[in-house]
Amino acid sequence: MLLFKPPLHESIIRLPAQLALKGLQVRGLGILACESTSLRLNLSPEAKSLVDICQALRKSRFRSVDISRLSENKLLHEYAEFFLEKLSYDGLLMLSLLTWHFDASLHNFSTAALPPRELLKFFSRPTVNIKQLCEILWGRYILLSEQELTLGDFKAKFKRLVVFLEHGFGLYFLGFSQ
Image (cartoon, rainbow, N blue to C red; front, side):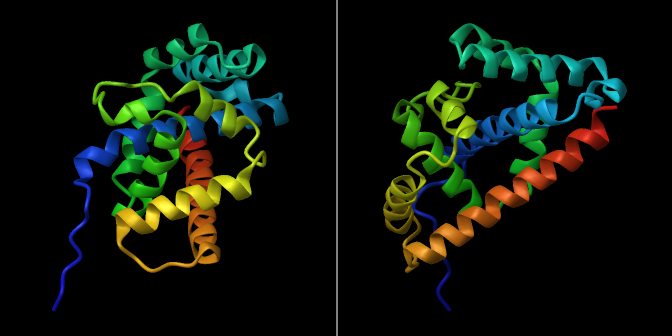
């Protein structure tokens, strides 16, 4: 019986995956805040602060000053940690590849705590060049995962992952932020 031995140790891909999770949360909160004027009514002070930061990020087009405010929010980190524990190696790898696509220097800096600006910008308008991005991520994914997977299967798998995280985020945020 052959066992799958991942080419990259999980400790290498956890941080970049965490940054992608944080980027998805910023995106989700930005959407929730725009769609629901009553969202803030029942939120904890920490959650209100995170909503304010996400709104400021969208308005400022992701200025570095506003991105740095994310590091002060405990809820953002707790969310990412909660979902990191739920993800398979494949999920971690896909999210890491996404983060590395926008900032490859993250390979070398294990202490980076904030999503790269370009990743946040991508999440604010994810349909821009999505076809090309999926092809790039798929190519890297099949090299690192050593799996045979068609581009179509990769896209479906990646979409399921993002939808799972978006729905999970909504439930997590609304359930634990009060």
